[in-house]
Length: 386
Image (cartoon, rainbow, N blue to C red; front, side, top):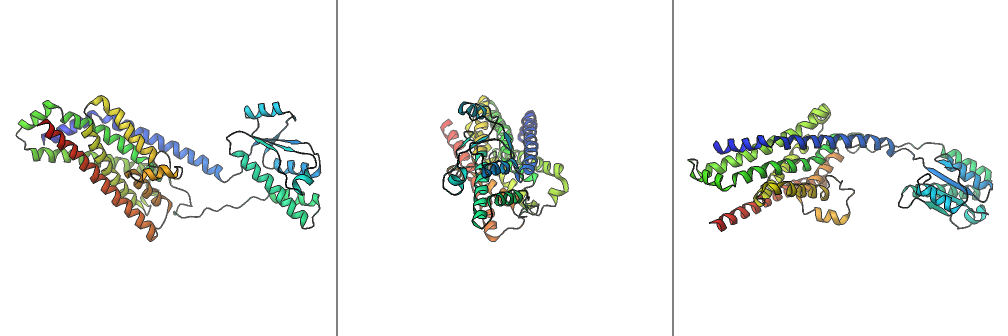
């Protein structure tokens, strides 16, 4: 087992890389968990903005709309001066400015004229206020058409606005409709597995491909088949060790919640296939890279590139259609598709199971394809060297 011992010796020298990426992995998970808690608290609550209402009408409808908006937002005093308005918006002292023109009732309520508004450029919060103004005017319009007087209609709209909406999440995944924290750990796992395996195994392949080392191995009493078998064993041991370590993290952090998840076998199997894909990619990278100085650059391009395109560091829901089309030709995309199915559903339909198993098969085929390409490259190099 001389070759295997040498394999493990080189691995021990690179344990600092392993611990570094595990620390990065945990930092990402903790950050995402904190962000998720904050976003969950804000997702279904009203946003309050700093806005300004410039009233040039002074009528009952104008005052009623300003009072209606004040239920949701903080209304700031603002002079009717264009330069002052632009300055306040530039320095984000206000997010939205609406101007109520003269004859507001006849022009906007009974007519079709829209209110002049100024928003922070590139901000989406302005559409939120637009919707509230439209809601107010439409409700007042309906009520006055139904026989209510204008003061009664305004009072009724303001009173109805005070009633909070009841929100109930649809529990599709058995966790109250919210995605579990450990599912995020599995979302970011490709980056960690790719980085650790590509770094460590590429260093090892470069070490074993050095001319002096190769000559010594050829002159040794250990046959070529046994040497290759020991190298394969070394790859398998490192791959399994990293896989077990990554899967132990959600167990240690979330305990029974994770262990009682009905989809635990799917999480483990999907991540196991990811480990095989990562091993094959690292073997391909190791067959291409010949200098240690190039490892960092190549591994960063591979791990970060695949992670950004395939839905690891940026969720698939956010990616554009064009990027998703490109990502379908990459194995990590199919891992993330499966992970999303596992995380977002308590039970699988026949169509979802078909998609999940299709992703499993595609990952296996990608692993075999990368392995085949790497073997072809190694074979051609040996022929050219001879």
